[in-house]
Length: 304
Image: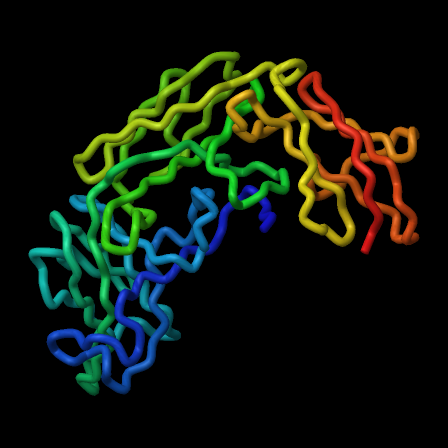
């Protein structure tokens, strides 16, 4: 699957769907219906081709915000059925701050002050096990199976994925208090960094998530000569031919300048995705040359 390397909606957080295990109070089998949103509302890249519908956890020792999506959220109060695992630290209007303990599962109840009806949802807490650097704000079309990235020298925008350990196999983690350190970079949000004028070299991000540490390494390469190869995405795109500039270790290089020819005539990149070129919808097989980072490849394709 190809996806744009930007921000994606968060996956669900409830571990006990309807018909599954009840909250201790039985609140998740009640009649109250509300939409709940676990902040942040967006995530950076999902690693290892993971489905964005996979579950997310709170990081052990970390925090998140649960928002009640309702026309008038004031009549609702948020409580935890097990504050030792997840505590409701505060609530202001529709937003409740959740503080995570060391690990486990807890039901969070949202109760209507007037009727007493409650909506319960399961949340899980997992410890940090690893971190990885991913593109933030990139515009390339990238194969979702990729999980390793390098960056062209210049102004680099980074996202950092925090990955935990649980029975579900390494969920993405939230900690709005996460701290990131990277020489020459500034932390811009709980999981992003801005690195202006990044020069060629190898770098390591130090992440502190809920009091636990992990590192994420990445390379910055010369945009003129840093590619080891240019390879096409051969997965039956209907209107575009898309390509990846990769390092010798097969990391996708974000931020490369691309040049294309179509049947030996210079052609522009797609306005949406700089590593793609539109294929004329004429049913004819066209020869496309893609150039980036000092490497090139030739690919034949037709619009489907």
